[in-house]
Image 1 (tube, rainbow, N blue to C red):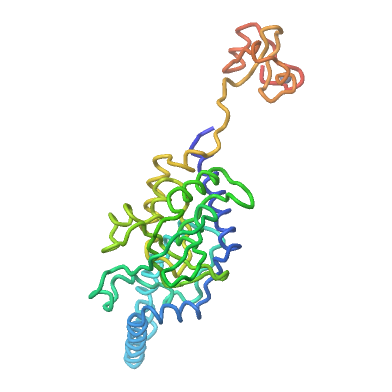
Image 2 (cartoon, rainbow, N blue to C red):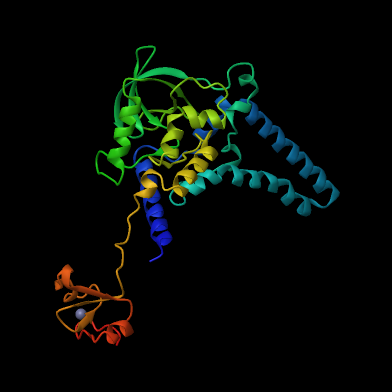
Length: 327
Ligand SMILES: [Zn+2]
């Protein structure tokens, strides 16, 4: 069987599982009101701009209607917004093709990179909270103590690692052990995104191993634990809007890991290597499909494999009357 096909199946299956688990684990559908609140709080400049654009569009429509060609002008006025929205949401679509609810009001659901906000330009582009990792729950969840002395459970943003606690998935134990080895007892720097917590109250964060400066791609690769999990194939991308600051990079990192068969991408189930189309025993003259019950009784030492029925015939074998391979 084509290996690619199996591999794709595995990918879809694990992705679908990841999404189900994410939703069960608190990646609640983001309702548009919450989203508007969050993006309003953190991206107020953008919201104001969005309103201005809407008002301008309305004015244009009004003028166009007066001129008697409203029907022709209105669709083009709305189209660009819809297109840019599609582009902004596509990373989520790639990682979560099914079941990921789309925000109801897309125009407000596309917070752009916070780094571009004017208030951030004067200071360091990336703000972080120092914290010490006091315990590791699994590959993507840890306990930390903040400088204030407050304890928090932290779920890493944008990634999902194979299950290692309630049920164990392939590569789950390895990932949990890796996170424990790299993070336990260490000081990390937590960067938050638009939404601070999930519905279980867990803090949602990008976990930097040392303080970031510009938050550019090179730095993300070198210093951010979420990204390193993806690059090494310890995790898959899981994008939950509105926390999408690094979503495009994360999708790129996952692709790199997958193309290089790193980590869980190399652990995809392999079909047992087929030795031939039909099997017989050196102690008889019958040949069988490999799944025939009589084939199952042939001791491995006595197996003889044939690539085709003609091949078997040529060596003096007859088709089995039970599994009836072609003659
Ligand atoms: Zn048979």
